Length: 163
Image (tube, rainbow, N blue to C red):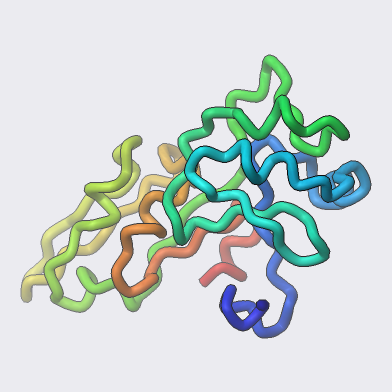
C-alpha cells in the first residue's frame, strides 16, 4: 500500500480528514469506526494504514463541506467555531510539471477555485506556474487534475518532504 501512495519508506504522514486533531491526538481519539468514510460525498476519505481514515485526492478535491465532522463521535475530527482553516495543507508544483517543460497545460490553474495558481509566460513557450501559498487551501483539486502528477499536497511544515 505504501508503494501505491509513493511512500516506499512509510515515513510520510497520511493526510487526515479536514479539521482532524494533530496526528498524535488524532490517533489517540480515533476508534477506527469508519463513520467518516460514507459521510464524504466525494469518497475522498478512505481507510488507510492501521485502519485510520485518510484523504485520497485521486478521486477529487475536498470542498470542506464538514459532513465528516458530526459523524466523528470520538471527536478525532472536531471543528470549533473559530476553525476557519480546516488544515495546514498546501500544494507544491514539482519541476516535472508539463507546463514548465514547454507542454501546454493549465489544468491545475483551471481547477483552482481560490485562484492560487497563475501562469507566467516565459520565452520558449514555457509557462511557469506561480502558486500563491497564502491563497492555497490545500483542497487537492490541482492534484486530481494534474496529468503527470506533478502536484504534491502536504502540511506546510513538511513541504520539503513532499517534493
